Length: 405
Image (cartoon, rainbow, N blue to C red; front, side, top):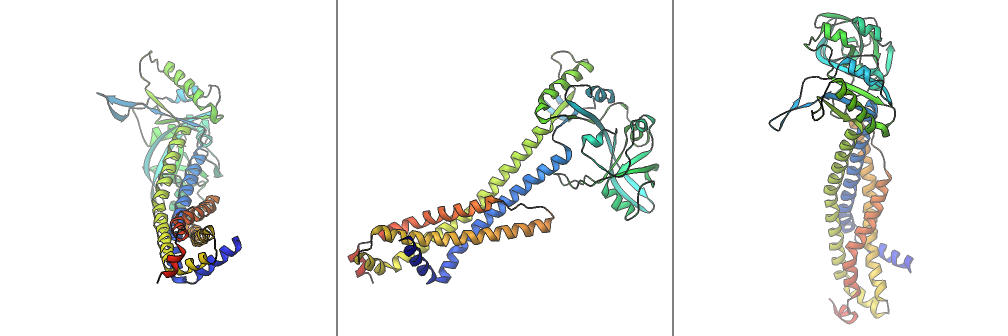
């Protein structure tokens, strides 16, 4: 029975190839759009994960507190965390290591080449905190920090822009006219979520930066501090210990607001991922509109088909064909058209997503969701679009149908 119904449905569809193709085109476009949007959403999620993995998700970031005047927030206040505070935080339970950053932006010069770079003054532990890896050479040491040595570690973008194919180790860069010796290079990290080049960076001892590039009336204070926690599930408990220790070190009385801010990387990751997920849902919902249009096209074609085949339906009923056979045949035609369109749309969406990923130099995953979406759409749209025409065909009176001209 099922084979016979499918065979007759296929014969009916094949008789009107152009009309079937144009009807199927709406489903093809709709499914391809949804598959593309799902792929785009997963790519965004993967890029977010990749970026935060490169930074480390078990990280707590400390900075100045927000200034509030008359109930209005006025941005970040002046630095409040000292180098000694950062060292003291290392002694807390479940803390792997700590570090800090004092930064500035300068023009780096080597020979006839120059390039604008971000300079981070820090300590050796920043490499572990920020998941940085030395590519060639060596890092500076704690002794270099205390002595304010003019040693620097440079990122891959700095190498490409200033040195080209030369080995930078041992070469001397000039920053604000001051000479600095390259002792190491960093492995590439690529762009961050904001599209900023993480490899356009120079690291040096914080004391060196303070003495040679950026003076400050508060030379012992950091712009930002970092605490790397041993495990992610201990982030909140460590954050409470940090708050207690810093309040006691800063002599803050009960009721006095913190003069520092504490941000957990896990919370930041969750917020960004939620934004990415909502964006993916929104894009998929917009793309699904074309599926609705495609299903209306199938319904319209099937209604026309019922009208054109009224005498055929009457003849079948007169010869004893059950109503359910008539209904199943038209439902089968609708489902077959929808299934073919969904399959072609899935293939087209996957191919286009991979081409886009190649052009944008991004890894676009091929997800099983594409198959699930295509199969679900094929069945759902086919049934919904075909049920009205199928019921109409089933309810035709055989005598009236035979009289139809």
